[in-house]
Structure formats: structure tokens, C-alpha cells
Image (tube, rainbow, N blue to C red; front, side, top):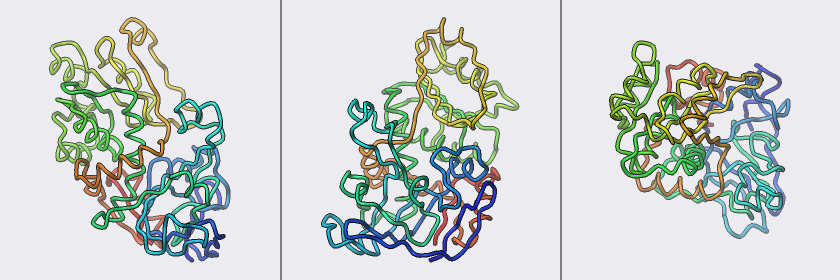
Length: 345
């Protein structure tokens, strides 16, 4: 098969490699769509290294059809259209036993410990099948939409901690694909006003087209003034930091009302420690939460939301590339001129 191989930091090549073989308890999936996320870019540039091997096939957002099913696999068959939760919890550690399987101490993942989806085929180990990491796609759902169920699942996991309800004012900092997904899920949860802050004009316009009530260019406009004006001087109920920029952490904290909920959703690169004005948290009694990966239940919810058209993730795909143009696709994904880039092997 052909694949994109990450040989070392900043060296990603398209080459022929051996098609994975499976045992009687595994699946071989023919990748039909694989999307590039910000985490892939950080891995590519060596800014995220935990679990990453060299050389290896990275990529974890994908959908496809089963090309081969092991003789002991009864739940799936050849030809089934599926997407996969790439994170496998151990099921027995403290966190798994206390409802936090997404931060399992022993978790492994496709695209990290197991070869990922930037290839024509990907092997699905047995535990991913028996532990419920695979979701069937409805016949009318595109593979591109199925691939985006994974990042949507992460958004759902992050918003669970924020308890967004009817009438809330939500501020989202960053209008990349994750920020726009946050906006759509917040709207579906009942938020009455969603304010999106984004310096990139194309992404700002995209957020508006997807239903943002107000968009702000933080370079030429004051996000804080806009939020205070829209909330009678109180501040936002919820603020979601959807971009890992250490310079804007305090800006995000400063636009929340007293008792507001803040999600530090985006990951930061290793070594980037933002200065935090702790008094903003202390005196305003802010609730600050993080978000890591997804839970298996989130993948099921994501597929249902996409199938019902409550969240139109496929419209986020601005650019599609064949697998042999993987380096061009990565360049496009980090250029700021795209929303979501999808590889089609």
C-alpha cells in the first residue's frame, strides 16, 4: 500500500509500504477519508512527542470501509462503513473506573502507538472492536463527515464540563475547525449568543456563515468591549479557548462574568507556559477546566448529531487532496487559508 510516513521531525514522505496483515480478531479498514488536525501538525514539527514513534504512520481522524474482517469478528463485516474512536482506554485504572476514560493512565491510540490513517489501509486491533470504539456510519453519511466525527467528539467531551444551557452567552476564541464545531455544538445546546474572536478574515467570515451571532477581529477591535456591550457589562457565561496561543489566555479570562466557566480546550506546545493573571480567577470565582481527547460515548453522540444535520461538519471541508500530495496538504492545513483539509487515499 501507499502511505505518508513520518520518518523524523519535519520529514513526512509519501512512499510504498507493506499493507498491514490482521489476525482472526482484527479488522483491516480501507481508508476513504482522513482529515488533518492541529495535533498532526504539532506532531509533524516535533511539538508533541508523547506516544509518537519514528518512523510511523500518523493520523487519527478517519472513516472508511472494512476491507477484511478476521474470522472471529462477528460485529462487523467486509464492506461496512465505519468511523473509529482512535483512543483506547485500559478500562481498569483509577480514571477509567471513575468516569474519566479519556485521561486513562495507560491509554494507547491509533496514530500514536498504532499506525494511523494517512495510508490506504489501517489495522484495527481487537480491543478497539470489543471495547466499542467503532461506529457504523449511516448509508447517506459521507466518509469526510464520518472522519470529522472524531474532532466533533472531542468538542462534545469538552463542552460536557461547561454545562451550556438555554440563554447562555458563549465566547469562542479561534475560528478554526475546532472553534466552529464548538460554536455549532453550543448553539445546539441552547446558547442564545455566540461571539467568535478570530483575526483571520476568511475564518471569521466562515464562522459568520455557520451562525456566529457576532464576530470580532481582535487585531482591530476590542473583544472585551464587545462582550461587555452585549452582556450589559457582565461578561460571558462561557469562554472557550480554541487555539493554543499563550498570549491570549488572560484575554479569555478577562471576558468572562463572575462565576463564568472557562475551557482551556486547545493544547499548547511543549515548553509554552502562558502567564496567567490568577486574580482574574480568584476574585471573579471563575471555573477553569481543561479538555483531553474524547470518550467512546462522545463518538456515538457525534455520529448522531451529524446524521441529524444538527451539526453540519462536512461544510467545514475546504480542501481535499490525494494521499500522494500529503506534504502539500499539510502545508495548506497550516497556512491559515483553509478550514479543514481532508486526504482521500
